[in-house]
Length: 325
Ligand code: GTQ
Ligand code: FE2
Image 1: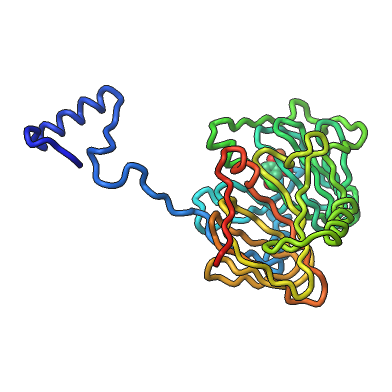
Image 2 (image 1 turned 135 degrees about the horizontal axis):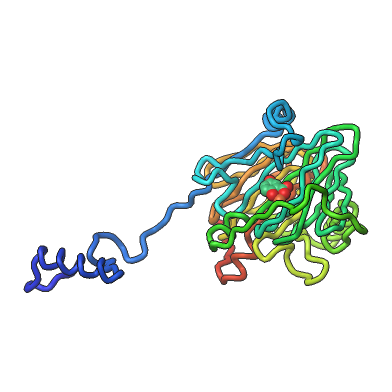
């Protein structure tokens, strides 16, 4: 704080009271830097499928979708994030539906992306377009699109939800509406624009693997929007990645944040000073600017799916990646 000798502390107090009454603030009247540093809330964290799965299956003992409940989900909760989400920018949940169940139609301003994990017979309807989801399939639900989900199979189904909800909330644009009538969203033909089948994504990954390898990610493929050719959402991008057997990538840090899901394989990811040993079904978070490198310790290629806020950071001119020395 810099004060001229003629001004006493009492005069400053009076001045600050006048500022407050006028709806103004003098940051120099308090100690500390002009732009105080903010520690990253999201922490490095690993969620194990062998812990998640039994708890998810047990959740149907507590919540019935026939009694007005909307979604049977368990959210990944990052210990550092007060909003109980996987990261400050990314909401990730596991959704569980029993045979014959329907999760009723609604719409909201946050966008969602579903990545199918387990079971046969799941569908999601997006603005009247019904998409059947097999494991590995991805479906985009854009902002304000009506959507419901169902399970026409004989076994429970599990998928991963990714939402940009925290970003929307920060921008004071959160809206939500239940479907006006007590019925499911109307069904028309499947929506190819929003549907990304596993067969196509995996084939594209294999063909990329023949052409190039990235020192930090081995083989990394971004899902692209079928219409714009850009990221799936302006706020969230999704990636499919292959680490070949014995691969140990170089470490780097990125200003974006990532939530990974292990589709198959065994390995570990070092994130700053943590070593996350992962296997199929596990999830982990790499916070912004955390130094990270991946290793495949198995004999088969490891496949990782990730959701990242990279497109948003790029859009606002904040994306950067730095190799670690
Ligand atoms: O399935 O529509 O995990 O609206 C959170 C909010 C899933 C959904 C979530 C949602 C949904
Ligand atoms: Fe929803």
